[in-house]
Amino acid sequence: MKKTLITTSIAVAAAAFGLSSYGAPLLALDEDTELFVLGSAGIQYESNLYTDRVNRVSDFRFTASPGVEIAHGRTPAANASVTYRHHFHFYDSESTQDGNYADLSAQARYDTGVTISNIQASFRQRASNDADVNLVGRLVKRDETRLNGSSRYQISELMGISAGLEYADTSFKDPALTSFDYYAIPLTYYYKVRPQLDLTAGYRYRNTSVSGPTGDSKDNYFFVGAQGELGSPMFIGNLSLGYQERKFSGINDKRSSPSYSFMVSYLATPRITHFANLAYDFRTSSSQGLSYSYGSLTIGTRARITDMIATNFSLTYAEAEYQRSPRAEDHMFFNAGVTYNPNDYVTIRADYAYQSVDGKNTAGASDYRNNRLSVSASVRY
Image (cartoon, rainbow, N blue to C red; front, side, top):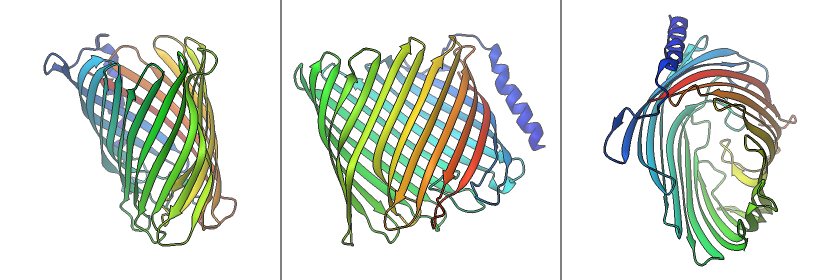
């Protein structure tokens, strides 16, 4: 019965090819507000569903995701949208992991020419494992709340300032894992040295609260950087380099190190973009709320083969070193995908992901290999 449902639902989603190629909404609520109905269906195969080192379980998962979107404003200078999807997961063999999960997101942008404000917010329920969030023989359920807002004010032709607020809360259903939340306040000063290049200097304060015994932490990060064209219109960068200190509450302990984020894109052709990201920062683990440092390098390419077909791939290498713990890991992730848009309504995707986590034989570390292959069809009408 379940396999019949999977096959039928994929066929229904694929049948959306017959729709008109005009991206009109289902309903215009007023002159600037539109209502869209969303729907997607997909099949995913995982070779190591629970990301276990020894007891590897492979399985197929079918996902059906109905939803709705309300969009207001059509210009880049002023727009907003709210999207709700509900994901239904059905596993072929591991049916005890079946479930349904809410997915709510919103965004808004307002640009007056002098002030640019952006905000993104989301609430998502998830059931999955990864290198940090990992329990033997079961998927980890959690609620994730995110808020990210910023506003930039242009003081003069050469100078600008921005302030932001970031908030994240991760709440786990299983008491074996540690829930935590943080808020961060970044402040940045911009000075234009070329028409399309700003030098930056700034400060970020971050406060992390954990439900476990390890104690809360406070971060102070001072940085300098650059944003915009790096010597050529083909090279676009967002660079920051600085010094960060993390202090822990309730214990006489602190950590400090250089921190950085270098993001560079190379526009090889109008259809092909290569990118590289190099980053190092402090993070908080779901395992006892431990603090750890995470350094990563990602390289990749996005290419639009035709007006209807696009491809992407990326390769990431990362190192995680946990503080006050022997745990350490090397991570390697590879992702590749292709997207087909036959018209303004329909998107067909195929994706492959490989995960390799080497726990270096340290206590409490994740150690696994996983292959994930997925195919999906989605409709926005």
